[in-house]
Image 1: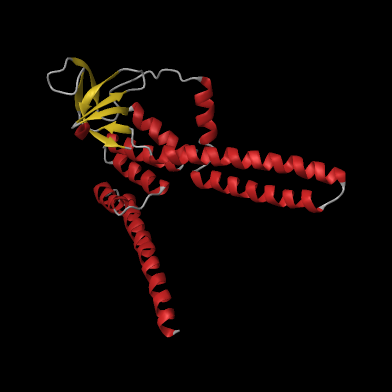
Image 2 (image 1 turned 180 degrees about the vertical axis):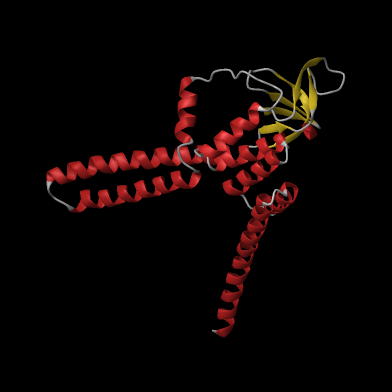
Length: 251
């Protein structure tokens, strides 16, 4: 029994220590930020990010430190990562739009199909966890209403419970679907930020391809194809071309 207790205690200690280390590292980074030592704050936040910790607060603070350090491209990258984890956060949206306004390239986005825009707006109403709780809660409610339908003999109650059970089932299914779409959006690797000061996009994946147009650091692109060290990217206005993957940072 004593041996089992010690094993359980060691597990709890091993879990608690990283959390304590994260908190202390976060406090140290915030102290550097308040003291206007932005390079040190970036290094402290970056060490947390490199350890595998993902948090909208971490990425937002890292974006702020990069912005204060006049590294706009990195600020955009981390605001984009924060937005994926907290899609409805107004502070993240404001700082992201402010950072984008300071980039060289001004691109007019091609309008999306209304249904796609509407679907993304609903998806971004909640995080993956939020949609998961809605899905689980609705499913449990459906089961409870199903039991009510089976064991109550009053016809009116049975009709109401059956209708509500069907509604809860559909709500659970819809919540699961949007949760799945939100998770896929968080984990996607086909969006990136240009990190090279400027890059000339080519018509083919090699240096001998025709020059198409120039992009500057900070602009967001979508990766559509990869061949070796090259990738084909598309920008918001629909134009696309080939560039080296090393000139990008994946969001």
